[in-house]
Image (cartoon, rainbow, N blue to C red):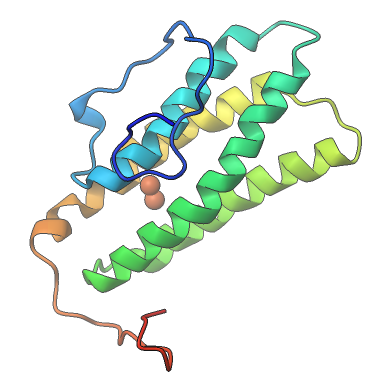
Length: 165
Ligand SMILES: [Fe+2]
Ligand SMILES: [Fe+2]
């Protein structure tokens, strides 16, 4: 595994890829673990970029989609939970954006399972939107709340074992 901070969905190991885009501090959301998660999207862009316009490399496109499946399951739920906990006022529309991305990833996966050829161009466009529109646009909006949580608007419920959900 790489040593991406606290990440169990870190960028995949493998042959080095020529970087189409590199991580910079300007992409940070001020949360080490989530930055580690977000690097999966950068890694996806770097892996898909050399596949654009190629044929016969569909398995590599598929592999990136499978990584994204892990990403949406882990990252979205953790981020949504934290946004609620810090009282981020727009956590509901933020979750709705996550839900839409979740649908995109699972539709791509379902299409492939039904025989559709993995589409590098479509995947690249989705990842690019994800980085520019969501991580750099929407995710960075919660940065001020990480240091100064708002008074909690939503109750945090606890299971009988005492863990929040
Ligand atoms: Fe997000
Ligand atoms: Fe995020």
